[in-house]
Image (cartoon, rainbow over all chains, first blue to last red; front, side, top):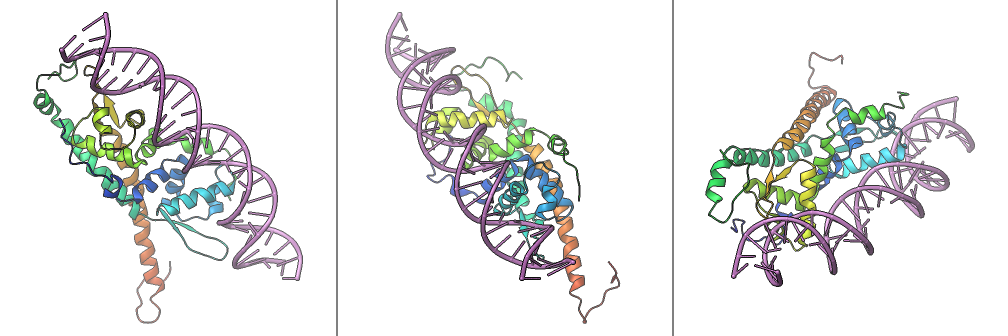
Length: 131
Length: 131
DNA sequence: GGCTTTATCAACCTTTGGGTTGAATAAGCG
DNA sequence: CGCTTATTCAACCCAAAGGTTGATAAAGCC
C-alpha cells in the first residue's frame, strides 16, 4: 500500500518557492480585485484605494504583498508610483494547476478500474463505486 | 476621482466566493504537496501524514481545509476515510487566472509596441506616429 | 468483550495577516 | 520657501492560521 515514493525530506524544495507567495497573495478578495483592475490599466496606489472603504495605507500594504509575490511591479513617475500587473507569475500558477488538474481528471475518468485493482480483499466499501 | 464609497461590497460579491478558500488552501506548501500526491492516488489521512514530521492531527486539519475549499472529498471505508482529489475547483482557478493572464499579456504587448514607438528616435519612422 | 487502529475534537500556544492611526519622506505647486 | 499631494513607515490591535498535546469516537481484530 505504500505506493508513495521514497520519502523526500524537503517537500517544499521540489517546487517553485514563489508559489506560496502568489497563492497567498491571491487568497485575499481585495487583492484579487486589484489584480482585476490592473489587468485593465496601470494605476497608482491612491487610485486603487478609492473604491474601497479602507485606508490608503491598507491598500499600500496589499500592493506590497502583490509586489513581493512578483504579481505587480512599480515604476516611479514623480511622486506617484504606478502599479503594473506582471503576467509571468500567473503563468507559473497556471502551469502548476494545469498539471494536477489534468492528472486528477485522468484519475477521475478511470476511477472504477483503479478501485477494482486496489481492492485486494480487505476492504468492503458501502457504496459509491458500483459501476 | 471616483467618489464611490459603497462599491466595496459589490466588488467582493462579483466573483465566486469559493476562490478565496481555494487560493488560501493552496498557499500552504504542505497542502500543495498533499494535492500533488492525491493527483497520483487516493490516500488516507494516515498515509498522507507519513512523510511529514508533524502530527497526524495537523494533517487532518490540512485535509479539512482542502475539503472545505472543495479540493478534495472523502468517502467512508470502514474506519478509514480515503481522500480523493476533485478537479472541478482547479478549473475554477484556472479560468480566473487565464482570464487575467491573457489581459495582462495583451497589455504587455501593447506597451512593448508603445515603447518601440517611443524609441524610434531618428533612425526609424513608422506610419503610426499619432497615438 | 477488550485492544488496536484511524481519525477527529478540544483546549491551548505562537506567529502571521489585515486593519487602524499617526508621523515621516518625497516630489510638484504657488 | 512653505503647502499640498502621494506614498510609506512604525507601532499597535485583534482575529485567524498552523502547530502542539490529550481525550474521544468508531470500526476491525483476536
